[in-house]
Image 1 (cartoon, rainbow, N blue to C red):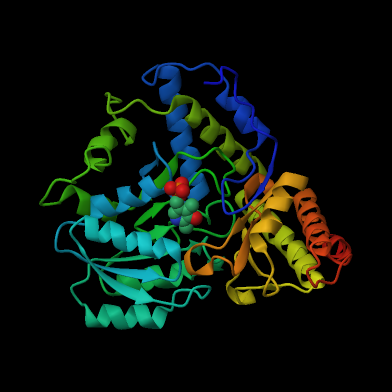
Image 2: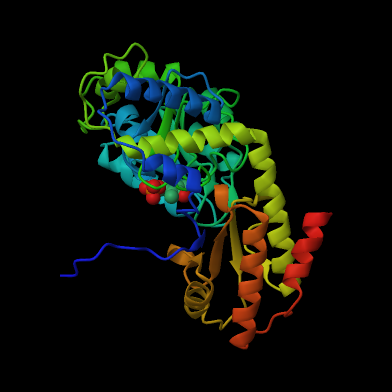
Length: 393
Ligand SMILES: *Cc1c(COP(=O)(O)O)cnc(C)c1O
């Protein structure tokens, strides 16, 4: 047993999440812990709800942070909206659509799968076909920003399609919130969940969620109890909802919520649209550098996420060694491929606070150095200047 405090190294986090945490968020989290029913804390909860509504661009009253990571936000949506026997159209074009299927089945529902190739967006025509084949479907669920591949799907069109067939839409926005356009009310999304550790640049462990009136009506009219006590929104609404009694449900992760509050204040200070534009600008510069090096992107330009860059490398590259060299020599973390993409792509995140000019140049310079030293065939020495040219264009 070692009796000494743990001191993590300072890394630059450019993987699929967690992303670099803004120091202001860490500082907020170190403030004194107070009781979760303390009136001062309760008013911070109210502010956090308003800030989340602003981040999601919604007036949904039931907008709140679930006290657990993005996966728990996902479960909150599925367990509350699905009852045994319900049919759910699940779109899968990467890892996270597969998790949606698991959720549907564990709720006793039937998942109708709509499959698209990894790296492609969800195909609305296939979804429409599934809706026609299953007129009794209740929900359409899809991932807006697929972090496993770096592809974005047309959430607005998919939600409209779901509504046309009287279905609710559940949207995974874990990686999109704060990084690229997302408009919950304008797009009429019924249930949405996100995470704090991607483009909000907060620490992991909290999941913002939001539900439309239509979704709330479905939850209130359930014939069966939600099988998860912790996630049952009928109970949580008394804690977080409008006119809530703030009676004890569970102990909120108090300091983690200080962090979320601060990260949402930072987002509003910058402005949502400015944040989206910054993610795009840094992505364009990274792209210029990656292409100048002779490497290419996995996803077609039209469907590429600015915050998650899936990059292909020359066949035969010892990609795990590249990542460990980046970590050991430059304190830089990038992500590997997940599932079938393992050994095929790197996932370079430019999320939230980590989406900045310095990180783009650091990453390109370090990648150039490591690949050159390992003898991988690239156009050495070109990437950083290409990115600088993109920044000054
Ligand atoms: C990261 C992620 C999740 C899971 O979030 P956790 O906080 O790791 O539980 C779900 N969906 C997508 C698209 C993600 O990127």
